[in-house]
Each structure stands twice: as structure tokens, then as C-alpha cells.
Amino acid sequence: MKQKLFEDWNAYLDVAPSADPSDDVVRFHSRVLGRDVNIEPSLVHQPAGLRTAALCAGIKHEGTLDFSVVKLDAPGSAAAIFTKSLCPSYAVLAGRAALADGCAQVLAVISKNANVFTPTGEQDTRVMTGWLAEELGVAPGDVVPSCTGVIGIPLPMEKVRAAVTGLSAKLRPGGLDDIARAILTTDRGPKVCSVRVGDAVVCAMAKGAGMIEPNMATMLAYFFTNVDLDGAALREVLAEAAGRTFNSLTVDSDTSTSDTLAMFSTRAVPIAGDARADWVDAVRCLAIKLARDIVAQSEGATKLIDCTVKLDSSESDAKLTAKKIVNSPLVKTAVHGGDPNWGRIVMAIGKPDERLTLGAIDRGDVVIRMMGQVVFSKAQPISIDLPALARSIKSSTRVSIEVVIGEGRHAATVWGCDLSHRYVDINSDYMT
Image (cartoon, rainbow, N blue to C red; front, side, top):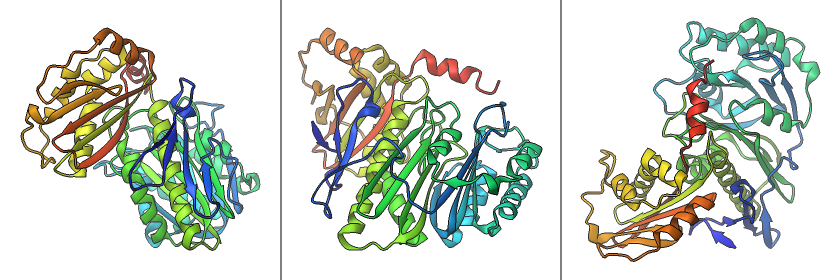
């Protein structure tokens, strides 16, 4: 069934017959082609003018892809949104500086090591960037670094130096599939997608499975395109798309020190009018696809929670309230066990938050739905078959929660997941 995701976005979702939410299809209606265009769950479409290399540098473990580079054949436009963490990685600080002019030529990603709160992290990042610039024949200011993984462990610089030496000879056209694998840490597998409309191409990849409640974008997500737009235009589209996608997902309420959402363009294809509108819709839909995949494939997750809140004060209040619901350990564990305990939802929406403009909530103004079924309605008793609803939640991999407060003039949707024993197992020995 084709579901319109947001009233003012040209973005639709087809729920797949399979149990895996990652199989759901995201699409938009192309003005240029006059038909719907599906987002491909692969990197079958990649812009020309990119060369890549993915290596096993031994950053944490031997024999694992952990060092990757994407080089544009010529300097292009680029933009990024970075974490708002008060403890950002040194790579984030360097990336902000590199992209201040809206241009870049190289993306370099180290996985399995976040390079955060390390004694020589700032210097190590600067040295690594210099090595890459010299080896690849680019300006140091055109290298954008990213790091992800364990916090507090210094980068093994001798291994980084060995990986950079001779790297230029290892670059090959395309190859973004290898990059998507090399950026992973605890992820189940790569999260990728792409689309082509006429000559315009945009593709994207993401990593992230835990330490996830973005406060800007997401853990690491990279978009590559060929449209002729400057860095400021790229950033405007990225920021707008992130608000309803990457900034509307949460796994465990923890914001990473390394969050980076970046876009790089070769600027090979002029774009305007309907073609530009199609491209904006494509970016939005790619962001929807990746955000939902991150949640569906997150650490220990067995269910994707689709939570919509409608209230009268503001869209910001609606999003904050929806996140209170999906971040609640009690709600998450109830969903995991198939328990339709709507009292936990009441608890969650009532938790105080100084960011809210919403005041006291009158129970006579509240309607709660789980799996589309009304479980509470404006202080009136509801007769429901709780065992049947429990079976529905227990057997589903997609669980819907909707809360309406008052007339519900403003709405926000947030994607979250359940909390399982597996999440605890993964994070109880992550460092070792």
C-alpha cells in the first residue's frame, strides 16, 4: 500500500510483504519523467568522476576493512552537518574547517576508532590530513576526515601512514560499495541507496547501529551526486532533509561525538526547474530510506517503531513528545515483548522537558492508538481485545504508535526501535 509520509513532501512508502522493514520501498513522483521513481536499495547508480579505495589498515583488528578514501577527479562542491555534541571528535572539528568554503575533493574515513578525547588527537588528525593531501595531490583544505569507533584510544599512526603510502595507485573508478562496507562498526551490514533521474544521479550510504539520537544528522552518512550546485545550496537541501529523517530517528537516546552528514558533488550536470525539484525529492527520499534502515538494523533491534504525535502547540513539541515515547526504556521493552501497555505511553508524554512549550496535558484531550487501534480516548473507557493486540505487536516487525493531543494541528513522526537483550550484550563489552 502506497503511504504518503509527509503532507508537504513528495515522498511515499510501500510496505514490503517481508518481515524486514529494510525491504520497504521509498519513492517519489518525478515531474521530469511523469511517473513514480523508486529509490534503489543499492549503489547501482553512482556519479562518474569518483575514484575510491578501501583498505584493511589494522586500525583495531587485522583483516577488516577500516580505512577508506573517496576522491573526486577535480575539486567539487561539498557541504556537511556535524554533531552538536559538546565533545566532538577531532575529525569533526577538521571537517568543519575544511568545508567552510563549500568545496572539497577527498573524503577519508577511519572506522573502529573515533579519535575522541585522545592526547594527540588534534595533531594526529592534522598529520593524517597532510599525508593524504600529499599522496593524492590535493590541497590539505580539500580533505574531509571522518572517524568512528571506540572513544579514547589514540590512532595507530604508523598503521595510518602505511595505509596512506601508495594509496593514489590503488584508487579505482566507482567502488562505493567497498566504501560502504569499510565505514561500518557494529552494523549488521551496509546501508546504501541510489537513484537516477535523467542525467542527475545521487547515491548515499550510512553507518550507525548504536549511540544514536542524532542532534544534527546521523552517525556517518555520505551522499554523492553530480549536479551543478554550490556548497551553500547542497547544505540547504541537506539540512532540510535531515530535520524529518536523520533528526527524527533514535535508537538509544545517545548522541555520538562523531555524527557527520556530508554531500559531495562533481558539479557535472546543470540542473534547474523540474529537474532540480526532482533532485531535491530524491535527496529527501534517500534520507528517509537510510534513516529507517538505521533504526531497523540497529543494535539488537527486532522491531521498528513508527511513532506519530499530533498536538496544537508546535511541530517541535510534537517531535520532542514523540522522542520521549520511543526513547522510553519501558515503552521499548513493552514493544519488544508485545505488551500493549498504553500506560507507559501516558508516562512518556507526561515527562517534563524544559524545551517544551506544551503545558499540562488534560486526559480529556488525549487519544492513543497502537497498531492503528484506539487504546485510550479522551478519558473514556475503551473495550479492546488486549490479547489480540498483544499478539499483533509481538508478531510484527513494524509497530505503530499514534498520540493525538487536542485538535492535533501540528504533527511529527519519529522512528525508533525496541530494546532487546541483544542490545545489552553488544554494548556490555564493546571496547574489548
